[in-house]
Length: 484
Image 1: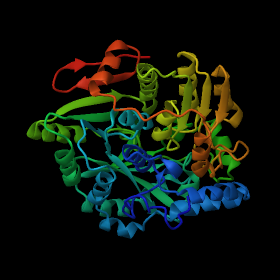
Image 2: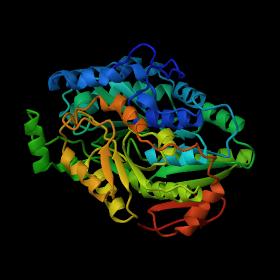
Image 3: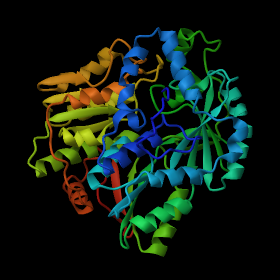
């Protein structure tokens, strides 16, 4: 999105080499703003004054909207030659500065996850991301030339890794969902292998002795190409196209490439030589080893929240909120379906809404939401927010397909901030979703924190219902296991 003066007036300014329009950055801000008692308005970095801009952008011709989207992303990318100047500790210093200066009963560390943000909001705890996106300029790479993208990243990767010995680089190239951006920039996702000075300092200052470190571990993997000891190239990403479609092609891929006038009918792919943690969502286990070392030295407990797919956590958190609302004598009859970084922990609780987070706007996410609705007590109202990424991608459901979730509502289903005619080029949604959220009439006082004991009691009462494990690392005990 375009930047205007004042975007960061209420927040600490992140390093210039980190992407604002990314899962880790947005979810961090949503988590931190909730703990500060603030709404996640405009994805945390766009002021209310920018809302009219959304309507203006949506009224523009398609080609103009796409160029605005492309160049706003490119404005965040840094030259490859500057990668030697990147210090990941600058990122973690900014991360920890986002949170209020107080003591917390627990701290979550690890994978990005929107449902995890809502879990942290309920528990009143911060989350420290393992993975960050550093966009690097690559203006001469065609999105469908995967091998060219890999080669273009080699020298910037070398500079970045030499300057930061405690990270692993996952260079991700997804010509399906990131098509618009790939024409101008590459996606360098870095994963911390160790806590580092800033995270250790935050834990010592804000987690009391005997406090709990919760590792958020998404074990999703992807076939990759190892290019160096700490350098991994990932062709494709989780979304509408499958792993095999990225690497072997399909009729859907051929039609997609024809639709965009590409000279390719199938993507070339480097030889796969290993399976790695998925670049955006996957957890790199080296960090766990360092957390265990730090916990032993400082008298902290370690627990592990373990699951395979990013959305495996969503039904658990939705049902937890429903259970929690009933404890508070509230009727849990409103569902808020969220998409990627279009989420809102503050207004979910203020409106008494049950949050169900979807990782993106693709078919698998629609399937997860539908599966949840088919297997849960019906909701009176269902509200849906949809992220727009500007591409008629492989596996993108139509707006009418998305409307099918409203059929599960006993009373009413509606979009929040979505311009149905503009989707998936509805770039106004990023500033308009908040206005529609505030039109939901119900208002409830903000609750006190849900305790870890209450969370574990909920898990005990629902053993076997979710594809999630909550492991007590000080014992060999599983709080909840198995599949839903």
